[in-house]
Amino acid sequence: MPAHPARIARSRAYRLYTRFPPALRARLEADGATGVPLALVQRLVDRGPVEVAAGAARGVLLDPRAFPLTHVQAHGAVRGTLEPEVQEALRRTVAPGDVVYDIGANVGFFTLLAARLTGPDGHVVAFEPSPPAVAGLRANVALNGLAVTVREAAVAATPGRARLLQVGEHSWSHLEDRGHHPGTTAVVEVEVTTVDAEVAAGRPVPAVVKLDVEGSEVAALQGMARTLAEHRPALVIELHGTNHEVLDVLDDAGYRAENLEGPQPLRDAGPVHLLARPAR
Image (cartoon, helix red, strand yellow):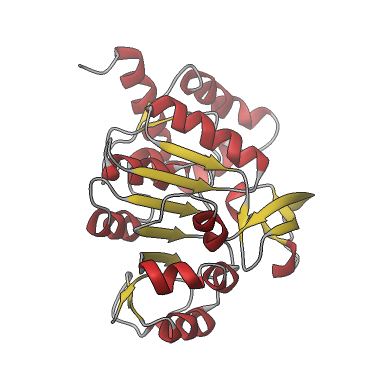
């Protein structure tokens, strides 16, 4: 079925805006009178879904209220260029019928991509603790009609409750034990779960886990120790200054990791993405 003409127009307007020079976008996104052009473009695209233009997620629909023009990931998401190394890793590891856990799902770009890759016989469980991000996640899932379960919870080493630093840009929200963030706008109490607890409670076992938890990578891996030992899922992880600690955990679990962003050894590579698979 051909795309609706209005959707095509909205999507093109959104993508055109993302191609403006950064300095011009900064002026358009400033407070006051210079923000009027931005408001007009946002009003146009807010009238309905926009479509991802390229990449592995080509054709996925996004709710522009969840991905406003000023969202730090919006431009890459709508153009299909967001974290291409993660897109490629998911394309390489997710098979039809798989179960995928998207931990730190934000508003769902990779959740939707994973759900497309698993197909109608698979399933994605998306974990996200930030209430505004969860609202966007649910909206994007509803637009696409894919097999996704949303869990409004953080993932760490032990189940319970914790305080979440809610950052103005929700992509950077993180648990309080990771330290202060200068962009914090609120502190909220959230549920915390573990992968092992989810599996023990009857959640389907993941074949692939995508992990982006703003520095809580080690805690999340500790909370899936049994799942790693018994089920050996593939792992796609964004590192946030935790390279040595994460690699120590993966080594102990019998996993081999590769740098998705180049040949540099992972321990010295800084904030990159890795793909880890069982070595034995």
